[in-house]
Image (tube, rainbow, N blue to C red; front, side):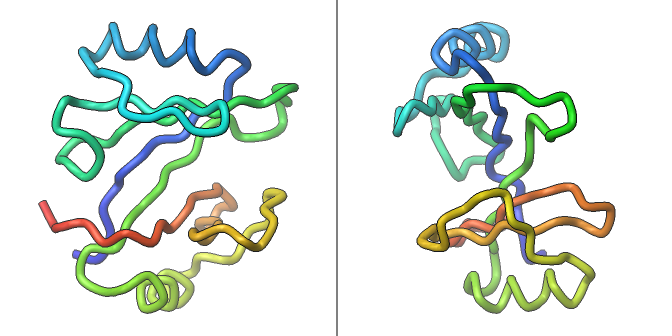
Length: 125
């Protein structure tokens, strides 16, 4: 195993309201708030067996743009080694407007769906 699904990121107009709704549906709690985004998850927090949900604010929702993407974390190697493995498997670098200062890599799967490779290693399940 080399990656784990750690987060599902959902673009929305009202992160607080949508996070509260999904927290009620799933029995999750608010884990973090950062720059308008709200992260919810199980009581054991990020890195547990269930992924967290991150609701990120966007001004305009475009029907052509994806509204959600997954984040993965390496489990048995560092981020750079996992990036090389994903690229060798057919992932490609993707530009979704990032600044270049991010601590994660934005990639696209072979069909063009964006996902992020985060830095922190998680234990395998």
